Image (cartoon, rainbow, N blue to C red; front, side, top):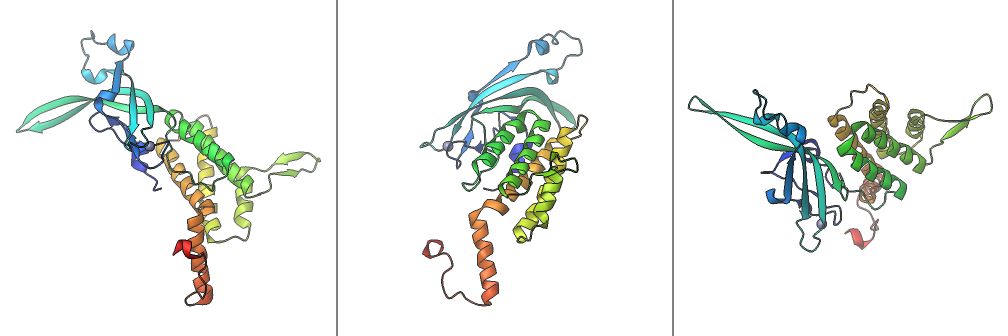
Length: 269
Ligand SMILES: [Zn+2]
């Protein structure tokens, strides 16, 4: 599945509710209409209405809504909730200024959780579970999401059998840092895909490091970047089709001509 940055980075208005990938069928989109949403202005916001400088764009609150899968055979429903604020939209027409107000909604929770990208069937279950945790954290807390991405990298290193601990000079067992483990992975004599994954794993590690610091300057864009890189790492290291195509390329380069026997049988013809 293609990684969609746009859907992750934007809030939305009720006139243009986005579609998110259905968590059940993984194919169609779950979305909603205006009537499927309830907007709730907070008591604190209501208390400001009597202020002499009050304007509609000061309204804040929350929202909840129900999304439904566009595939009638699936019909999965997802509950979404989050924060609401009001924005003023202004325009000029023949020298005169006009404005209108629009509720802007920022999702914080999806139940069941929305998958931010499709997790292939070849991904080990421990890694898959950690990725799903990352998806939930993404909407709520950037530092937690960054730490979860880091945890996924640790699990990938475990799966690739990269050594985890060592005995120090005092005879005590110590854990290698993620940086050192990724370096070990990069120094293994592996193929082009592993080398590409190595560079991306190192880059993601910096995002994870920043998440652990109290005064980090991590932005939503950093987490989206991290997720996009993670998505590609999974393709590089676990996607069987991806591996098959690279193997085909290697075979043709080796033979320097057509292959005498089909490499993968008729299933892939
Ligand atoms: Zn569906």
